[in-house]
Image 1: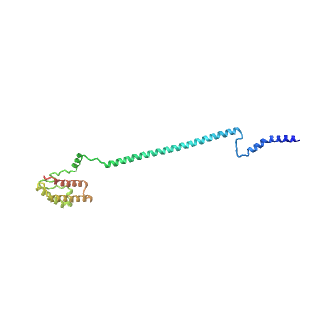
Image 2: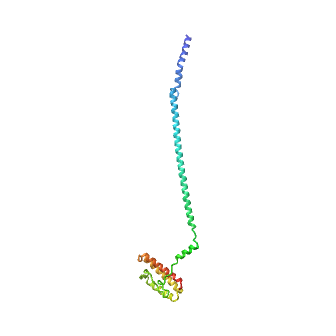
Image 3: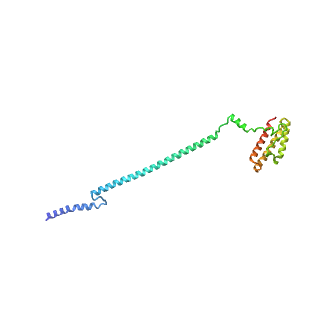
Length: 214
């Protein structure tokens, strides 16, 4: 009887053992494929998913690198442009400081251009000192100055083109007053620009005649 009980117990353990082991194994919080095929498919999926993630990250990294490279290039271009602009500004500034000095020949030409031509004998009679005034200077506004200058140049003619110091200053002062009247008439639009140019030139020539004694 004891032998039968022992054999029955061993047989029960042998039969129930795998079930107990299986029940104990599934008790853990771990899941796995139930078949070999499923395991292969799951593994392939994991490999593909990992490869996709790798490619996505590589693409993002490449895009970020391209953006950084483009920004770096723009910065270099802007820096170069700024450098060129600053260089040109400095060059222009230095050029403005060191202007070329005119040669003696150029200075002579400029001085010669500023010297008015002498009045002709019809404009200023060297014998009588009579003055042939331009049309603008015959206006009534110039009358007192014309009278004074005609008297002074008549005296000059009798002295062979020579004047005293007082006469010299009086002629210059009278010409200055005539120039003021001429400018005032121009501002008041009482004289045409071309007539103003002729009259202004005549006053300069009349002043310049004092340098000559014949």
